[in-house]
Amino acid sequence: MTTEPDTNVAYEELSCQELVELVTEYFEGALSARDAARFEQHVAACEPCVIYVEQLRDTITALGELPAESIDPAARDELLNAFRDWKSSR
Image (cartoon, rainbow, N blue to C red; front, side, top):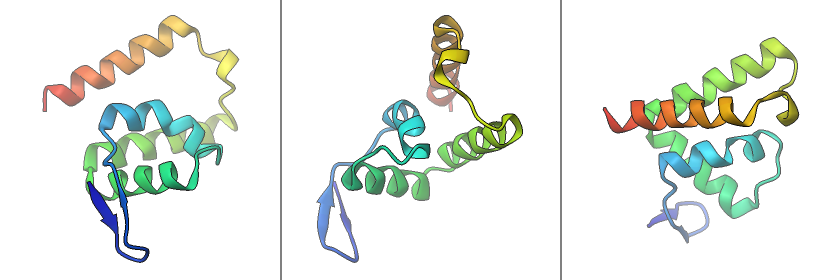
């Protein structure tokens, strides 16, 4: 558990897997203030997740947008599994 320095509010730490699952909502501004703070705290301390978030931002910028319906569910699962496998091998 970490404490937000400016507010003294304690948050449960976010795992890399949770970050991957929440990244779309983060980009869309759909996370609660608490979850957005947890997301930002994790990214501030996890270099692989910084790289992951930057790569997604670059991809979305290059494409203009990434509508969920354009991603085949099997491809999405394969990408998430590849990221998890890469992360666990480090």
